Length: 163
Length: 367
View (cartoon, each protein chain N blue to C red):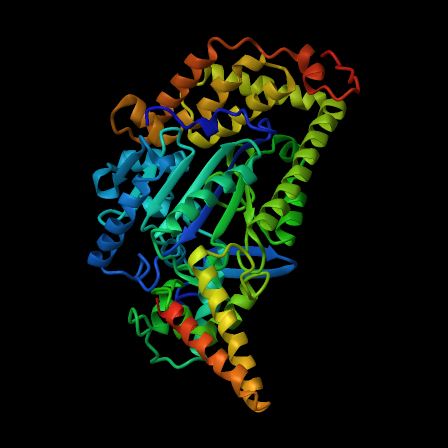
């Protein structure tokens, strides 16, 4: 049996993990198992390794030449390490990552702690969306007085968002 | 740093079975390359930005703060054995640091896999309390540092497995009863099925050393922090119950086997002159069980708990203040154990039943 990672040496390390009834198996050669930290147990999680391999397949669906504009990271780099380059990579490679995250986690959206900064930004953008919708409605109804007042509020909010 | 942290001195709730609880949060700075991808200069810049802000935290007054390049290989290994830094972090040098409080209940790694890995440790089952402290520190830091956060995905981390809460909560459980009654695999499988991970003391599949098992959450996206912790705590409480049940059954149905195990562990530890760390952990685990069951006096508990840590390879070398090869370590380990067990009385089998105290009176069969 060949190693799942390098696909050239005979596999000597066999790993099995069961999560929520789904069994995942990985076979590795000695060199790859060392490389992936299998013989360094604290730093190793089968999930990381499995996801590393699966992730590479997922991400190949996207364009191979795509580069993160912030840190220059590419999909080939992700295939190698199973780690991303910077926080902006989540935007750059969003298409490939969506399926991966779905398979990996309980849900697809964060429901936990929100940092204060993001919380404020979230509230402001919600208010902005509401105001824009009301403005469109007011214009459609030819209610120009309301529209003018809404436009002023939007301008003020834009100022807050920029600050 | 000469003594192990207070979380090791088992005093927390359920401390007989839950050795320790730990929670860690992963955080990164926005639009800065993650440590694994960053160039050396970028890593140093992040370090200089973060480190002074951590040292300013009220929780970090009188802290131990070191750059990884200033620590020797042995010092790093001691920190790994105390679970204060990860093995991965110990391999780091320039551009990485660790800050921990004197009590060693709080440790923050800078530029591990993520810019920040904050960890809080407690004795016994106290995941909620451990998280509360970290949450407070995290909130204090977010006023000064802009963390990478996405409205939909939550906190962004180098590895997609940590995205969302960035939180990993885990407890170290001592489960000799379930191992001796061969029920442990069932428990491990059941726990794995509900999306939690089980690992040994330092990783590895189900054959853990010293009957120690780490249980932690596997997923971080789509569930609130306190929900994850509540779920994990509930599962751990069930395992504690199962462990108590297994011990009761052993006392009632297989008391000869149980006493034989305790007697043999005592005999070997008291007289051996060479012992590797796996054998030491496995035998110490049985003595610890003996204390739980009343075969040894309660006031000997701390001595055993300390031996778990003090017989680890780096701790041995730290004690002897020299580098030792495996054979020398095995001799020194046996010597330390023999010396400390000198004050230990022989196991008192007549106390076994009372110590386990669950109402039912088992009838010990004399041999």
